[in-house]
Length: 124
Image (cartoon, rainbow, N blue to C red):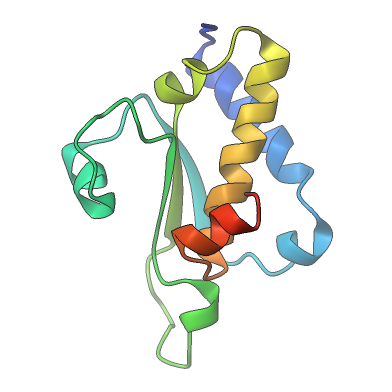
């Protein structure tokens, strides 16, 4: 298992964001990306989990495909990556970069309206 500083992890996340495909990047709006060490009980409850070590990331908000004219002046949607849980799957920095990218793409797919079954079927 690798462990990096929160700052280093955040930099890796920013680099991964810069490398997502342009068609997706151009459509992302009112969305913030955050890093937390571990999920809260509320985060776990939203996805029906009890094990705090099983959740790697979470999207919360109104999916892009469900927004309409009433979606104005709202607080930003959030994607949170859970650093300690992601690090548990990685032995080195290269693996960590790839896992961060993988989790980001998975959560961004939720932002674009895909449910968990669709995300997994698409290989995200």
